[in-house]
Structure formats: structure tokens, C-alpha cells
Image 1 (cartoon, one colour):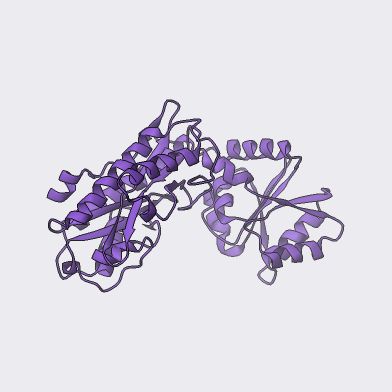
Image 2 (tube, helix red, strand yellow):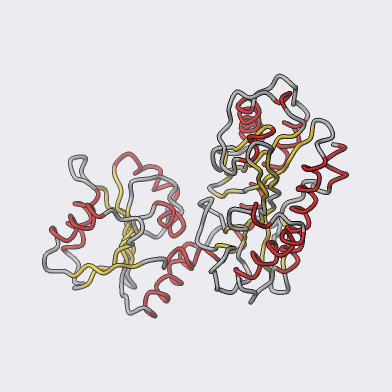
Length: 370
């Protein structure tokens, strides 16, 4: 559960958990190349850095630009600063050549083919082994620090949305709304928006990932806004539909059906429930309303340091949910040329069920009168 206590992340504990997981796969080391995974394991918030981890040593490989930052952010980790004329891959190869491991495990998803080939050519006496998802699986279960960081991000996003909603004027464009919303989040303490904000007026709300244009708010009675904040490296993700006047009856039907689908799906969330089953619950509700075929994406995803992490609520995702996972629940219905409705909240899987972390109004009467 989310707490208001002041917490600090335990990076050493995270690394110990990683090493235990690696041992279960027969791995004795890992070269971490994803900047998000480096951050998760050390607290370093910069870029262009690798992490080498074994049961006996933890080495952060970076460059002089980040030396002072690393000293202030990272504890109990050896620092190796590469020369300006040496690429990070070559520096990693030089360091690994001195280690006695005959087999080097490397994160595959965040290592390019060119980097892999370069490492192999520089380490002819060592075997490279591909490792996928080891750190990402740890990141699926949020610890207390992460849950509080996510909650802080959500609160900023919600406060900014309320403030921006009060500023809306008919002549404002989608882009102006997005800009005002991001400025409001930054003013409230966010480092940035969590992703490129989506704003769709009228028929443009049928574009699930539509980018803000110069279309003015006055062109329609409704606008879809998908946004989130980034605070202390952690993200939030919400979507609401805002009405400037009573919308067409078709839109009301869409909204009520999507809201019911979302509420039914949230009610079904709990530990041990298959991710695909949650998606199926929402689809059955929309099918009853004759709208299931207009739901063209998955129901939700996990997030944290990244906006799309490894948990997916969707077809074919036959893994069980676990306590500590945080997911979006965002059913949507879209009619090209008319418009779309998506309602999105952030939900924590708990030991006994779930906790909805977001709190913005979404009931039909509430949003219509707002």
C-alpha cells in the first residue's frame, strides 16, 4: 500500500535480488546497458553509462561529464571513468578483458547489434551470452519508495489537470492546451511531462495517439486529454474526456460503456488473476454495448521509470498479476470522423485486490457538470 512516510530506495537490496535471479538462470554476472536499469540498480540519473555486476563487484562505467553527479547520487559502487576518446563499448570491453569470467552476460534488449559485435570482437577469449528481462522483471514489483514516487507524480498530474481545465477557452488549440498542462505540471514540481501529451478535439479524439494540432477547442463539445507527470524519475499516466457542452447522444453512449468497462476491469484486478482475463472483462462489457470492435488496443500496461514497462493487460498475456504491480486501465472506443472516448486510471495490485491510485472525477454526471 502507498504510504506517506519518507522513504529511500535500497539499491543494494535491488542488486542482491538481481543476483539471485541471475543465479537461477545459471548466470554469474551481467553487463547492464539500459539507462533505466542502471538507474534502478544504482540511483544514477544520467545517461551513456553501463553497470557491471557480479557477486563480488559492482562497477559503474561512465564518463567525466557525470563524475560529480555520480559521486552525489551513487553509494557503494566502484566508478570507472572512460577516456573522452574511448567509446563506452570499448571501455566496457577493456574492463571486462581484465575480469576472470569466461562468460559475459549482456542485456540484449538495450544493446544494439553493432555494440554486441564490437564487444565480441574486443573479447575474443570470452563468450557473450544474451540476458533478457532480468532487471525488468524486478521492476514489475514496485517497492515502497517507488509507490510513493508514483503517487507524487499522480498528484502533480491531477492538480495540473484541474488547474488547466479552469483555463480552457474556446479559442485555445490542442497544442496550447498541451503546453498549458505541461507548464502546470512543471510549476507544481514535475521534471517534465511523462510523455508527449495527447490532446484531441472532436473527431481527432478518435486518434489514440494523436499529437496536438492547431485545432481549436470551439470546434467540438468534447476533447480527450492523455497526460502524465515525471517526478523523481517516476511517471504517471491518465486520460479524461472534457466536455465544453452536452455532447451528442452517441458520444454519451460511448462514454458510459467505456466507463462501465473500466470499472468492471478494475473490480477484477487482484493477485493471481491472469492479465489477459482483465482485458477480456473489459471487452465483454463493450461487446454487450455493441462497441467491442471499436476497442483497438490493449487494456493497459505497467509503468514506473518508463511509461510502458513489461506488464501488459491484453490478449495472450497469460501471466498472473502479482501484488506490487502498478498498471493503467484504459479501455477506449473510437469512431473515425466522429471521435473517441478513453478513460484511464492507475491501479496498484495489492495482496487482497487492488487500490486505485488516481482520483479525478470520471462519472458521467460529474464530468458533464465540471
